[in-house]
Image 1 (cartoon, rainbow, N blue to C red):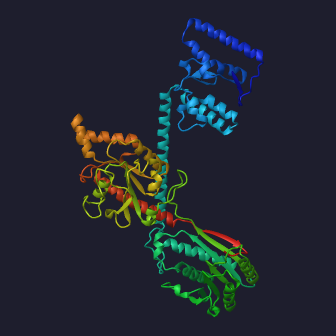
Image 2 (image 1 turned 120 degrees about the vertical axis):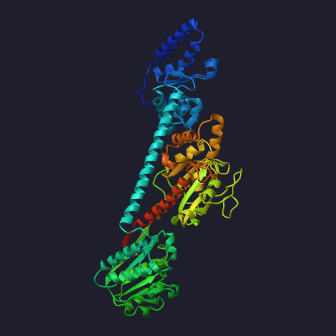
Image 3 (image 1 turned 30 degrees about the horizontal axis):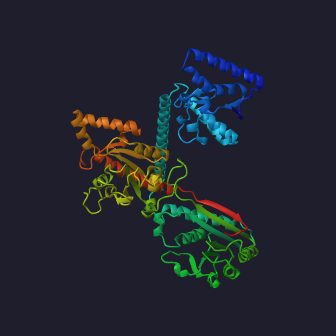
Length: 595
């Protein structure tokens, strides 16, 4: 025999060697007595004896299985001083996922033994937790079936909780949209005389107010310089703005806030201005400091200030102005570790004695996905290229061969051979994501035809990331028969990430015909049974369950589905717009430096 001492969280029982021998003798005597009256029980006792002895002594007794255990008992494993057969309540196979030290095959006892010998405390802790979990899960019934029943109930409860979270998130998003609408801060059509939308107007106003405060807070004597840097994730509708429209509007707003006279706005090359309105501003060139003569303040836009000679141009313009104050927007001061750049920074401190202030304006990207389900994966490039931020997007997904492309065509009123129709066929025809303009919903609305999930090219474990599923405003999970395990797993993933979805049964006309031939049931009864089956598997309410046939667009739930998609597209676009308009501009100030 081989004795191996184990670490234990319980107090050890120390016994003498004679006592241990006495216990062993009693066990062997008992075994011999039972062997005399039974031919079955002794094998089990022999297999259990080492573990029973270790229970009393605090020592683990390890006995070679091929010598100590009869052949028909070699499937037994010992745990906590008892022998058990794989499939019993203490079987590690009841734990889903991998366990360290090959516990699924060797059993808890052997795995914990090996982990203890290797001083692998993390593995010991994990194995002990798994063992306790098995005991807790099976203590009521003590069988694999009972454990599966408990696990299924827990999974069902988890899915319901995720569904509740998704509904709460949708209600919160809808409340945000209604709030912005009630305050008149929602429409992108509400533009000022310069063509700026509400969100850009807000940014301009906040930047001008921060600059005004920095200029007023400086010392009374001497010139002051404020540098500002903007890190704002742009929205698609900003692309229509001229290149320097925001900087020009900040300069004009700052002039109005300070109630001063002319403001000099200097560029490296003033010709970059196109159609920006420059009322109240004197546009000049940095290489001509005289352009700042008679102005109350100097604003330099994107100047090169990484050398002393270049910085002296700004200082010269400051000296030619009435008060000497300077604002630099997006200037380049070089690397802080560069010796020349260090000299520039010191020169600025020595020159602008009334104060040196650096202000950063940061506006993070629109939060496209809810804060659940872990870290969001990157937005696919094909969605970015499609103008995702300013469009409504609904995806049709599901297993290959469920008629997704045919449904896409039917919803858009197209036949398979019409121009712009999605390719259909008996094979997997959709090999890449493709977005189609959904004209019934209006411009900037797209219905996406996604490749089938669970195929060799698109396995389920990477499907969510590859397809960017969590970035869609709504997902339609289509199935031509009962939902498969792939469909249900996809639904759980969508619940986890808070993405709204509906369950759709396609080709329902064929299913009705087959059911009538088999059972003779009526169409109403068949549809009721299908709906109930979908409801039980998807956990969705009736208003999110649809049954359609692409060949019969006037029957079943087809028209109701079309209206739901239109509503979802408009809602998705409104939510994205509301999140964009509700973003907060973070203002970060640092004194006595530049940015």
